[in-house]
Length: 321
Image 1 (spheres, rainbow, N blue to C red):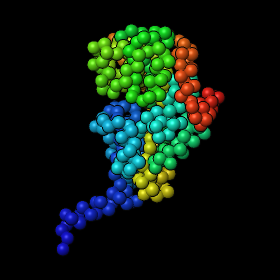
Image 2 (image 1 turned 45 degrees about the vertical axis):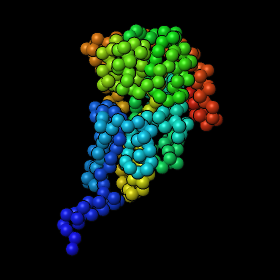
Image 3 (image 1 turned 180 degrees about the vertical axis):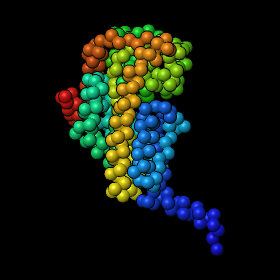
Image 4 (image 1 turned 120 degrees about the vertical axis):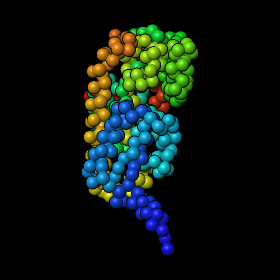
């Protein structure tokens, strides 16, 4: 005769793997206070409310230090249910994904949002289907800007400087076009590298700059806004296929609302930047000559658009109002 405890375990496993309801694990490399994690929390709250608690989201943020490529592998294999990933980190599997991360491909935050909300964004989301994941929505990731021990106002200010670049080959080519000495290193090594002079500059968005305490060693944050690579909220197809059509509709609607919430969080951060910077004794450099950067990287950008699909996508983004 089976024990009550054993029967309880069987029941719990059956519930978790049924279409009736389950706990959903979601991954993100950022900490719990990051806008992408907060937006995914909002997504989970909406899903729980609208499914009567049948589907509940467990958000893994700062505890998950794995690379985004590793997380994508877990997602495709169904080991985790959901993840927020940077679109650029998926370029090796989906080359077109790198186009939205190209320097100055978007003219402004408003332009980026318009493009992603329209046909171009929806086509990119649909492309994820062949990777065994389902794209739900895009999250703003903030604009990447250069920061270091001196201001950057034009592309020439970076010539000869040692600049940390993410360990992605396309980024190295772009930075070399600026005449810098690219230094590839993981993000967690940036703080000591800035402190000991191993690098002169790094780049990232404002929340990452603050959360990593890079303001302790970098007193100038120059608003070059050279990349606005969006994040994307993905669901494993193995998980997606266990959901009823009604629940899938609930997930999509909740994702759209979470994306709107994410944008509000970023807008709030932008408004609070001057006050926060003053408190940290960081100078925000706003008089940046963006044209000097677009001219400097023009040739390298063209070399990155080697496939007809990528070139066409870049042209469509540029033509979008």
